[in-house]
Length: 267
Image (cartoon, rainbow, N blue to C red; front, side, top):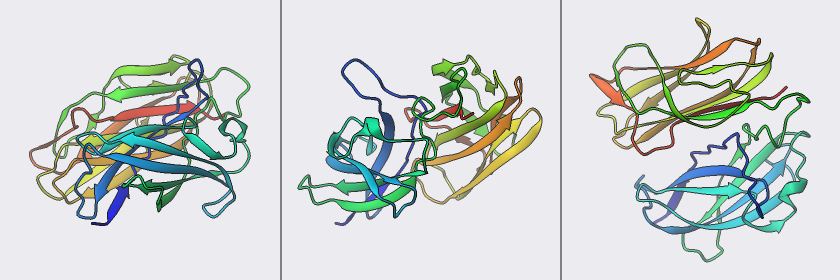
């Protein structure tokens, strides 16, 4: 059966820089077959390549990974820690031109890769790319699992904070320590929906809506609503994440899935 690849594409705004490892970008995905079923507990191979300027641009870096999917077909690899076949990850100039990630998948581990998609890297970590010469500001927080009633306004709450450079993040949202342009990412996993459902994700600055993402899902599997945006904040202004849906009587943020709110200051 032909395999397809569903890209979750969460590029965390942190970097990995432990002893003996280069800097890296966490990358998450979900492998499914043509019917939409998860490829569970399966060893797969990936080839990840960074393209310069455009989706058809010059390939400036490429690496391969061998990894295994979970029972839900999920996997995580770190871009920059694979087996390089072209270029050097440490030599990529993140501040010059847009960058795109090419994802190729081999489900049989025979080095026969199939191109699954090319996505602009909108979430390059602030530690790799930042126009700011001042304090580095960035955060990543896990969204608390919750049952949300239909057609009600609900600001999300945050539990464990993975990192909080600049101390702007708390359990209710992010408050800018400094004025500047900030990049935000929201990714929420929902437990299986009982009927076709519209889910709206809002970024709220103070009392005003500054952005909205509308998703419409019509399947009984775990689904992922996500989006990114850049917002200019004055020091002291806050961003909250709000969810509204129309599934009666309620919808549940999924347990055991990486629902996150993250962001960083660009300049």
